[in-house]
Amino acid sequence: MSLSSAERNELVRLRLENAEKAIEDAKMLFDNSSLRGAMNRTYYSMFYTVSALAVADGKSFSKHTNLIDYFQEEYAKPEIIDRKYGRALQKAFEDRSEADYQDYLHTTEEQISVRLQEAREFLSIVRQKLLQRSSRPA
Image 1: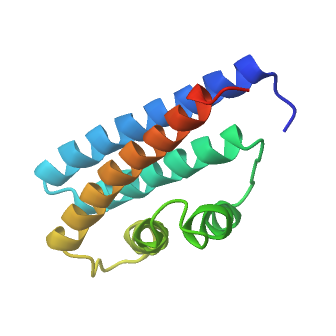
Image 2: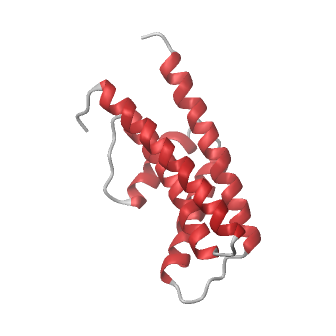
């Protein structure tokens, strides 16, 4: 990914903003009992969050599974970010796939509520990591 530092910073900011908007959308959909939509937007919040990390690292992925694998290897496995968020990301991906592609939804309101909380925490933690990184002297 060949972006200038300013372009990279802007793209990271945009993806984090998209993550925040997706959480807001998920909450609104959840509150209106649109569970499929809530699960979709919850996963995409986490996707945008991880995507912001990848951009900050100068990486780009064309497949969701590759982005998830990248997060697992670079952040969860070495515990730079708690492994529970790696598991939460994987579960959100699976739940989103079920919500988007299966006729019957087996994911419960409680499970979606948990995923939504995990997405909020995840976004907050990634923001902190990126802020710490940007405030380090060069």
